Image 1 (tube, rainbow, N blue to C red):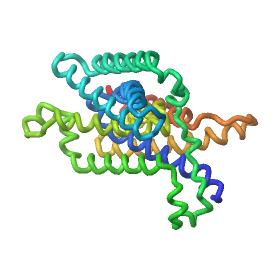
Image 2 (cartoon, rainbow, N blue to C red):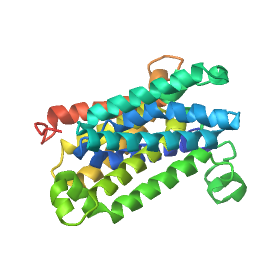
Image 3 (cartoon, rainbow, N blue to C red):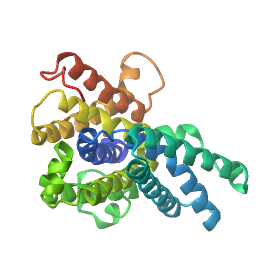
Image 4 (cartoon, one colour):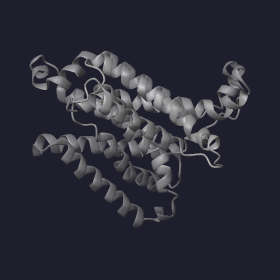
Length: 303
């Protein structure tokens, strides 16, 4: 692999892998708790947070908008939990109510303020800007030992690696309580486990992962990776530990294969334009799920 690969492809690939793993990891537990659609909900509710952040700062800046999106996502998670527990309704219905209401509120806020001229296009929200996150200061593998070159790494890579590390530590520490609340929450409560607080922490971490990944890879990968790799792994293995490991392997393979196919497959077939890496990665995760549903040893399992 030459210096061109390190400059143009290494960092987008690493960011995509970190984002996929960070979303798929909590997705295993959300799938078992029937909350897999929370990623879809979060991808919609960040809009009002982004608009409000712009109104406060008056400029299009990454960190204020990230904070605004994160606050909006956490508020949405709180409202979903509140409706589920107070209204005694199914979590999917609560998610549908909250994310459509908040997304509509964001659209109204956008139209009724001066932010209507801000460049918030649908394509960027869906597919992110993964291909543009290149490492311009890199000049070969020696750049990993050059502090000046390392300072030029895309901030998205550092952000996604940090979020992934936090999620891994959280799941490692709370592995047994998380398994208990997923399979038998009433029994977990009798053992003194704070199931409500732990479930909220899990969803909050998922929201943070989704918001961190949103700007770099777009919402389509977030939604696909929270659902597809864990669901495919669930249809292939019979234990939670194996499911988590398989989901991480599938997420990495889908990212690498999807990124390569998006960049090179059209050229191999004689076309001049490349495809969206985010779209191809999400498609590959869906293909893996389809194969697992057709040929997985546990394909008749109800997930």
